[in-house]
Length: 407
Image 1 (cartoon, one colour):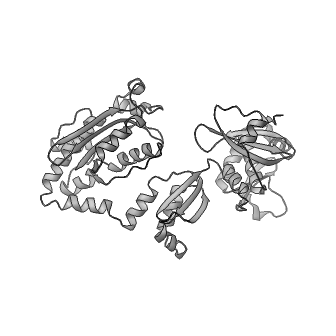
Image 2 (image 1 turned 120 degrees about the vertical axis):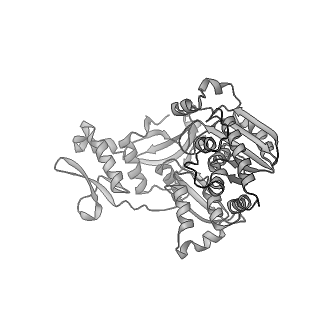
């Protein structure tokens, strides 16, 4: 039993896309036994490129069902089937993302018609759906709409099945794609990890955390662990059965969380900002052990971006004015900035130049009273100098709205 699928997305950034059009044909090897076709309200914008490609406008999806309203139907029609698609990785990822947002884990065996076509119909000029089906004489109406593309994929799949007379190639690819191999384990564990900053937790079969750390890119770091030949990671590679994460949004939030847990993790900041002969420069701190850097950076690139930013603001030509801007040693303020996710804000309570508490609140919540803040705040046990440096950089970039502490 197969479910042939095609999905169109709104064209948002990678891992932020939403479904706007979906078509699924349940196929028993002889005929279509069920089908589901629907526009979907993405609850977000559709890019101009996608509107032009699909002819789907915001007005068309405004009254369409939202994904949570069709989720049960998607589960029902795909249940106990193999999910088939042309570049199935995209369609499967879109489904997993959409279900993950609802707190539901969607898993299913998959089959991709692209590698199948390359094996069973070699020497085609192109294996894009439009060009391939045209070359094979398969009708395609409403290209780049889910219904038309899914139907063409179904007809292509029928042809591939008929060419695989011994049912060897399709079965072999199915087994390879869904086998419990180390390569598939890596793919399954890392496929939905975000390319964002945060805490990553490697867990064994029993759910015990066997490794955790704060990293700059959760997806990239996890893949690096699995691809490492170092004996340091050997045990973790074998034992890990699930990877969870906690997004932090910014380095400041990560350090606040570490500080609140009394975890002292010092960051290496090898580059510094210096003011010489009326100019700001970035260089390695080890080159000058007498002069103290104004700010420190993780990399030369980070420092260069800061210098470029400073150079665009005329008042910063005066070193004292610049130092005054980023100095918060005597401040008593409430700082409001970006949170860990869309629609969330971060607040910091600064007393005598130190962060004493922090917390999070929803975008439209009013927190300008001590009673409201006290319910949300998390107190810090200590404050590292690395956090001071990050706060100065945040002041420089204007990342925070600074207000007087509420009475």
